[in-house]
Length: 122
Image 1 (cartoon, one colour):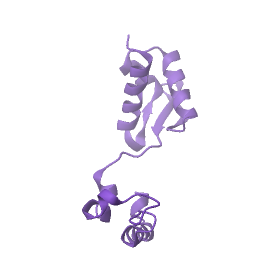
Image 2: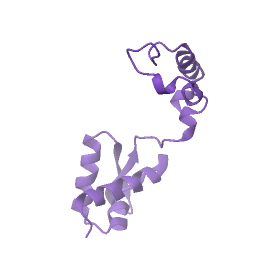
Image 3: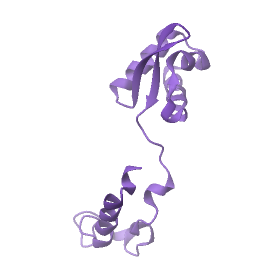
C-alpha cells in the first residue's frame, strides 16, 4: 500500500486529469487500490481544502460521488504577453523600491487588458 501523502497526490492527479467531467469516487479508489473508506476520507479532505466539488450520483444502482477539481491547470498561456518576461529591470523589480511591480504601468495595463478581455478567467 502507498503512503497516505502519496495516495492523496495520486488521487488529486486522477481527479484533476478527469477534467470538467470529474471521476466517480468509487472509480478513483479502485484505480488507486484503496478501500472505499480511504477514498471517502481523501475526498472529504479535498473538499475541506476547497480543491474539489463532490456531487452525489447514482451509478449502476449504487450511490457514489462524482469528484471534480475546482483548480484549473496552470499553463504558459496565463503569462503570455506579460511585460515582466521581457523587462530590462526585472532584476531590480522589488515592491517598495524605485522599480516596483506595484507602480509598473506596463504591468498594470497588461492586467487591465486581460481583465477587460476576460483572458484571466479562462
